Length: 484
Ligand code: TYD
Ligand code: MG
Image (cartoon, rainbow, N blue to C red; front, top):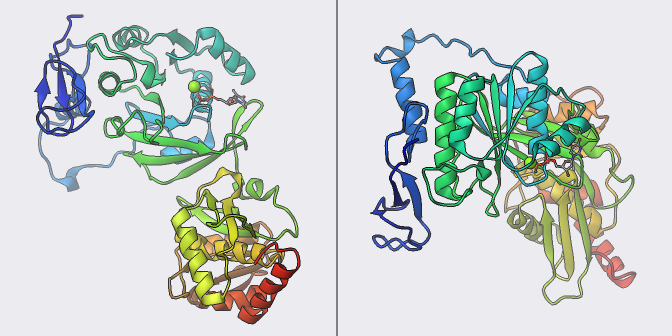
């Protein structure tokens, strides 16, 4: 393949240079200059430079050249390829769309290669030719994993990192699906920069996307999340691909969440739940039960929150630990929750319920490696903190949700009935919710729903009010010097 000319382009101002510069001479920005190829590619090559987007646009343009009324467009349902992994299909919106490119991102060791191989093996079982391009592991290593998963061995393996070679092999073998593990290890001969650099990652992805679009065969790209938490640096790939999936979870625990961050062919924010077991990733049909399985009985500082992940309810345990601090500036540590939110809630309980925590370290976390971002977690966080501070376990079978405002008012949140149904399904008998929700909602039989309008009302319901709480505080101080 003829060698293309490369230039170095500043991503901020667009200035071009003949060599790489740490700082753009035009706009003065640091580390914004990236290598790009500018020569037109041969037919097999695909896009160049900014080409990912341009090439796919060009191909789309070839297919539908004439403008027509939107009403005349029939929304033909894409014939999706079901992967056999229920949770993955759910996240994708029903399966893989032919010709689509899916980016699968996540921390190292989270299970990206595992799920990739499982998908290929399932599809190979259904008679599809599946090609696994490995830039990280040798065929022997991939085979070891395949043995562990006891999966179909008709998957084709190609240890290769040169994108031009890969494109040639794909054209020759014409597989039904291609997996690239990982995009950061790929390099294009047309660029001189190292594999994994922004220019290389973008160039390789653009070329692969172009091939997927022109052949109509789907492609999965595995991408590592960088230290900044983005895939392959400054989100260089997310606009080039059709779907971006994020794999998250606690490496220690077995549960993994697969989240659609972007999806051109289905819902975003849908979540699939897997468990990493001895034989790879398995669908988890009832994640709430798994998340609550190890919940301590009768321990203080534990509250159960019905949270919503995408469109599905998930019962998670919010834990708080409040201890006397030896530090002038007590520690505030959170895991799986927004630290600023917890700080605001601590100030609210101080002001509205008289819980003084300025001499206490406070640790608040969500068990099971789940991240909860929604304000509906406020009531559960406050209940967990109050429970630990007063060393009073919350009643068995209690669950809480609701947003709390700075004035101490409790506000309604969305999906109240879904949350209550999930709590009821898992045997919860009592729910403390915002007063407005309690008035409107149709609670399942056997679930006692109690509305609270303020933090003080919550406090009274759970810990017997401000005065009782203050008394508990001083008692705790005198006794063990433990909490409150
Ligand atoms: P892997 O798919 O290699 O992660 P990634 O490609 O995202 O870096 O999976 C890594 C972890 O998964 C590793 O710690 C071993 C574990 N694992 C299992 O627990 N069970 C299994 O069946 C397999 C294949 C892996
Ligand atoms: Mg891997």
